Every structure is written in structure tokens, then in C-alpha cells.
Image 1 (cartoon, rainbow, N blue to C red):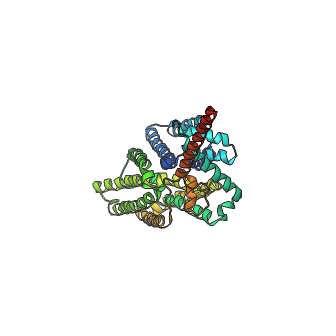
Image 2: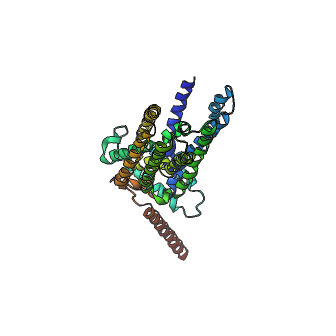
Image 3: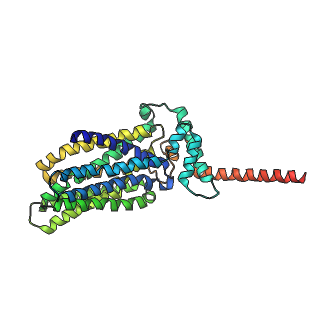
Amino acid sequence: MLIAGRIIGGFAVGMMNITIPIYNSEIAPPSKRGMIAGLHAQFVGFGFATANWVGFGCSYASGQFQWRFPLAFQCLPAIIVLIGIYFLPYSPRWLLEKERDDEAIAVIKRLHGNIGEDDSVFRAEYTQMREQIRFEKSVTNIGWGEVFRTPSNRKRLLLAVLVQVFTQLSGINVVNYFQTDLYKSLGMTGHMPTLLAGVYGLVGPIANLVCLWYVDTWGRKKTLWITGLCMTVDMALVMGLSGAYGSSDNVVAKGFTIAFIFCFTAIYSLGYNSIHYIYVPEIMTMAIRAKGSAMSICCNVIINIVFNQVSPIAFSEVGYKYYSLFICTNLVGAVVVFLIFPETKGKSLEEIAQIFGDEVIVADLAKAEEKIRENDVEEQEQVEETTTHQKSM
């Protein structure tokens, strides 16, 4: 029953991990897309932290409650999501793809909220979405082959896979899943390992708040490669301290080792944690957004599965030297991001297509907005002239 439950839950989480970043990126305005799309990672981190503290509390219990309650507790957020979905609007881009234009413009107005009498903002956004989606539908084929058909789409897929792969190769989930064993190897006993796991779980969400606040200012590319370099240095410190003092009685050195493990999740949460959810859907066109995102996330999950199987063996056989793998992968990731990743901050999803050399029908949202205002002024002047002429007659 446990295995069956994990399989069902795994399918559900897999679908949400693909759907939520796509949905968030499609409903968010360009200037705030990083923060809104990154909220997915924020609440994933909050979920990890909650799970850690539930586990810590249940470690004091006895009998079947110790493991039944943490499993049953998962029903609460699932019910909240199930109810909350009823109040969510459809993505305006999905509605336009299905040629439900009236519903799309209504959703765009709803997403913009109260913007006063000047409706040129959402009218320009609606025009850009509609024209680009209609153009893409006229020149693209529906199917998995479209992901590989053009050089621009192949580059999108490569970047999407790389950002997901480097996310896992950072070593963050190895630390997340096996941290209690790491604390035990550093001499922590009793309830201390689970208590430290609870505190560790709070560090990431706090650091991620900083990322969400600044990601639309810093940009994606700069944040990723700087984060990669910082994780390289931090992992080197963890490896060095573990190798030198892991088997010693030096309590201070072991304390610093644990502190740098905490620093690792903080650094990761300043960059990769949110950005791998932000970057993948925003570089994809409407035609391949779901398919390309799914393929990249599958790569993420496969590497995660491999590490889950290999890491216990690696820690047992080579111990602290296992960290050297992540020193290398983080360094390589930082270099690759710096050399080939384009910046996407502040651009609409349609404008990002220009970066990849695609033809864009309405290339500049600000110019489209200005043109709509000019047309409104001209129409108003014509109405006034007509009214004045009729009165004079």
C-alpha cells in the first residue's frame, strides 16, 4: 500500500511540477513574472520545511502514529489545492490558442485588476498574445516533433534540459534527503539530527524570499552563474572540513561544517531553486511549452532518482570525497550558464521569441500600447469633429 500510494502521489506531483510553472508564467506580467513564477519554489520549500518539523514532532511519538500521521497530513494541502483550483481562471494564452478570444480578454482584465480608465495596457497585451499565437499556429505543427523541428526550438530544449540538469547536479537533493545521516556522521545523536533538519528546512524559504524580491532586477543568467560559483566554494568548504574534522573531537569545526551545509541551501535558494521553475516555461513558445517543459523535468527527475540510489553507496564507500563530484558539477554549470544562456528578464513571453531568432508579429509591448493610445486619441478626435459638424448643420 505504501508503494502504491507513493506511485499515485508521484504522478500527481509530477503533473503539478509541470503545470504550475507553465500556468504561473502565462498569467504573470513581464515585469513580475520572475517573482510570480518563482512562488512555486517558495511554497515547495515551505512544504519541505513543514514536513521536516512534522517529522521532528512525530519522532517523539510511539507506535503507528509516528509514521501514519505524517502520511495522512499530506491530505490537508491536497484538499486546499483541490478547492482553490475552482477559483483560478484559465490561462489567457491557452484560451487564445483555443480561439476563445472573449474569455481571454476578460481574464486579462481580471489579472490586471483595477487599472482605471486606461485600458491600453491589457489591450496591447491581448493583441500581442493573440497575433503571435495565431502566427505560431499557422507555421507550426502540433506534435512532439515540433520540439526538434527548428534550430530555435532545439536550442530552447537544450537550455531547458541544462538548467534542470544543473539544478540536480548542484547536489541540493542529496543534502536534503541524506542530511540527517550527514549530521550523525558529524557526531549528532538523539533528536538533534531531526531538529537540525527542521532548522535547515527554514533556511531555504527565507533565502528564496530574497530571490523572489530581486530576480526581476538581477535577471536569470547572472543569478544562476553567480549562484553556481558560490555553491562550488561552499561545497569545497564542506568537503574540506568533513575530511579534516569529521572523525575528530573538534566540536567547533563540526559546527562550522553544519553551518556551511546550511549555507549551501541558502545559496541554492538564492538562485537555482526558483529560477529553474521560471526559466524553462518562459523560453518556450506556446506550441512547445508543455512538451518542452515536460521533457526537461523528466531529465531532472531521472538524475534525482540516480542520486537517490547511488548516494548511500557513495557516502558509505568514499565518504566526504563524494562532495568533490558536486564541486565539479557546480563549477561546470556556472561556466555553461555564463557562456550560452540568454537573459530573459522584463520581456513578455512573445518578445523572448526574438532572442531565439523567431519571427515576432508584435515585437514591442510598449510600442503596441503607445499605438493603441494614439488610435484611441484619433478616434476620439474624429467623434468630436463629427459631433461638431452635426451641431453646426
